[in-house]
Image (cartoon, rainbow, N blue to C red; front, top):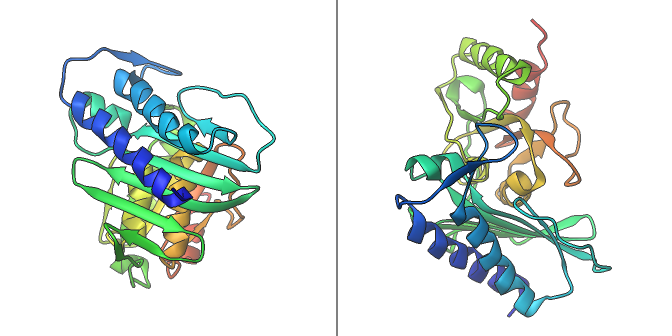
Length: 260
């Protein structure tokens, strides 16, 4: 099996776990804060993904949300969020997914995001386009903010980051945007930008497993992903993410960098 087939197979195994436990009776724990939830589905989905990938590529590196893994000398790193949108999942909200990306040295080679509830499989490979259930997808054609539906996310912090997010939302609404959505699963948010359901997204702090696959999807669909100042985003740490169809990117950055 090649890389993309393995990633798809792994994502579908995670989807089986999601479906098995969704709206079931399971224990919900917390991680870094009372708002950062963990379920058995997170753990089992990560195990299922690694089981599939390691069967084919046992020497590769793994960067995943729920557990740390020993580093090897491989040039390949799989970046995995076994269940993005855990809080939604735990509360019975059907907006969540598995996200898998493969990086060769410092370049993202592929991204796969699977929403089992809605039977939506998003896939992208470097320089080969982005696809939803096998059909090519493109970003929206909105060229101004007043034609744009936007998406944002709130980090688990209820302090300064939350206040700044709310102030930014107010500034965007003053631009007469079509509307704003907060879905609670960043990987899916990025998929929705890639397939044109919304035109822009921002979030103050995302981990690599939240955005690695979605970033490639957007770029392969014709969009753009940067940091708050328009800088290149790296996979080495948490980042401020701004994603768009490319046409409204500068407009978004202007609003996001206003100080008033």
